[in-house]
Length: 210
Image (cartoon, rainbow, N blue to C red):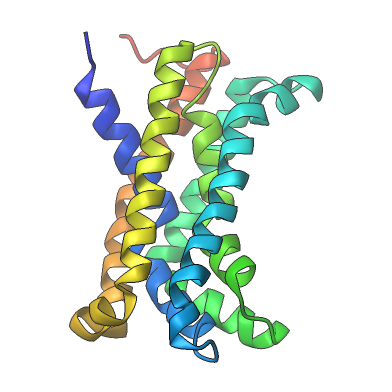
């Protein structure tokens, strides 16, 4: 039987940590000096690189942790804390687009790899998120395959938004992108706290079943 609530939760988690809408201003900045006829290829390249990075973490992230002798419960707690800090930055700090655009200006770099593919789309939060959502001890291979499919769907939506970036930016503007990013930060903070609680339960610090 399909667990639609779990699928919806995974979709929301991945959508929030990737934040496709927040990547629109980054795309517009990165393509400012790129001929318009290359924008489509630019977006496809960025999403392809992001997909490769995130799928690598989805498949091998937990194996790396186990090779280092780290418990998944501890990783869940650490990942949850990092996601929480990431969410708080989205809510109270500079918006995601502003932070990444400043980084690009500082390093005098722009392109499909930086800052668009990394750290805008395949962000540290997204890397941690896909590892947590594919825990080998909590989820079966078919369930992990569903998560991988959800990841690819979100990346597909990201590509679609990037291809429509100019039109969307005219509608919502920089302020709209900032508001959406902060709302997503609140959702991400809730998910982060849930991950911390789950990690504490895994290591036996608390019992949430009571």
